[in-house]
Image (cartoon, rainbow over all chains, first blue to last red; front, side, top):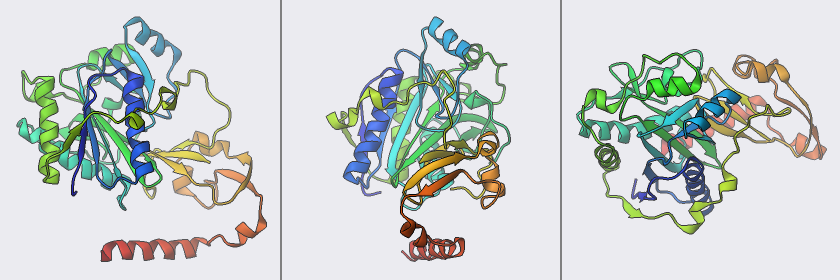
Length: 261
Length: 79
C-alpha cells in the first residue's frame, strides 16, 4: 500500500464501535479511498457482538443484561464474540480483486507480523470446517489465526460496493468460561489467548504490536488521526438486534464456501 | 435485493433486473448449501417479475458471464 490511516477513538460502547466501523466503511466508499483505514480498539462496557445472520436466543440477551454486557449485532458474518479486555481491530480497504479468503490472508499478514512482535507464531487456520456453533471461538476457519492449532484471533467481513470492512478479536486473557456462561454453552477447549503464549502481556502491548505488524506488512508508517465527523455515521446505521424472527428475507447463510466468493 | 454469507463474510446480492420479487425459496433459506450444490436448479433464491422486458433481453447467459469473468481475471493478472 502507498499509505494507511490509523483512526483512534478510545474505548466505545458496542453500538459506538460498530457505528464507527460502518461509518469508516461508508466514508471510504463515498470518497473512493484507495488506502486502508485501520482501527485498534477496546469496548466499554464489555459487549457481546453477534454475527449479522445470528438470531440470538432471548435468554442470552437477558444473561448479558444481568452481567452488564452490551449486545450489538455486527454487519459482518460469523458467530458471537465476547469483547472483554480483548484487542479488536478493523480494516477498511478496497476489495481490489481479492476474494474473501484472499482478503482475510492479506489482513492476516499484518496480524501475524504483530503477534510475531510479541514472540507468538500464528498461522491462518485450516479451512474449511463443518458446522457452526454460536460461539465464534469454538471453531476456526480460513478467516482465523491459530497458534499450535488453537484459535487465537477470529475475524469476519462485510463487502459493499467494492470495499470491505473486516474486523476481528484477539483475546488477551482467557474469557472462555465467561463466554460459555453467557451463551449457555459448554466451555470451548479449542481456542487460546495472548497471555497463554506470553504471560503478562497487557492490552497496550498487544495493541501496539498489531500497529507494528501492519507497519511491517505494509512498509509504511500510518497517518494517525481521530475519526472525522462523517465517519461517526449514526447509531441508526448499526443493524438492530433482531430478537424476533423476521418475515421472509432473501438473505441466506452459506455454510460451504466453495465456489462462492 | 438481499445478502449472502460465506466464510463469515457478508456480501450484497445484486438484483439482475428491476422488478418485483414475487417468490422466495424457503428450502434455500433452511439449507443454503443448495446455492453451491445446484445454483441453476434447486439453489434458486427468488422469483423476480421483470418491470422491463428489455432488461431481460440484455442479460448474459451463464457461458457469456463465465467468459466475462475469465476476461476480467486475465486483465487483473496482466496488471
